[in-house]
Image (cartoon, helix red, strand yellow):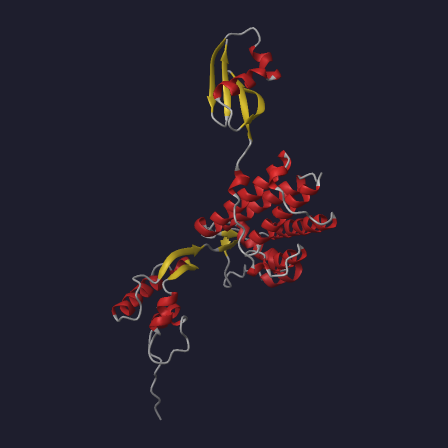
Length: 335
């Protein structure tokens, strides 16, 4: 007996429009349910290997335009944004089963947990570049998570944080709060627009470093600390969901971190009441000083000349020029 072969379509036939079928997998009256397909399409973000960048994506566009011409979809393109992720390298060579140089993440997950492995992979390189596998860097990612855990534990041991009173903060408290909101702005932009997850993680690491150095003196220190820790946990939650879920609950939230709103930037926290300026005499740095953010050029020049170490280098000389680069430096030219 001869059996007719019915599976004759090239594999590209199925892989060229699967994203549209995903919107209505139970639909039985045709290729697509136009209502659901047009609710979801086009795809906001496509992430795939570079080997798909020509054929698969080309055929997906062909199919999408065919479905558009048939009235099934209303959009012209299947995907709004494309991100091609890089390869994973081991000792400089592409990881592959044929070379036998693959690393089984399961062993590392059992040793350190999935969060550590996820953090390492996202931190090791921008997503579109190749990633060099490094066991020691995996350990570094684990150390960072342990530090964050200890900071939260230490914070909770110090007592209940009061309500944050932004009008009565000291300079140190304002500085930590500014760092918190600069970090929220940076991470939000890195995740949403730039898609550079490694720099987003680096920004949270900087915030954690600031928290480690922060000296707790008053109750408001606890309030500012609480805001910074909650921001750090929420910002890291897409990368390290398990530890973030647990820390979020420890910080007193009844809802899961995955259901929490994304942190928002308080623009008022970013405003500096003072800025640090460098003072040069004849092009060489001689001092640094804190200047009110709204100080005019004449005030800045007078403050610069009043610095003890500057006076040493202009004593007995004639000042020929005083150049103020706003918010950066003062250069005094004297001979």
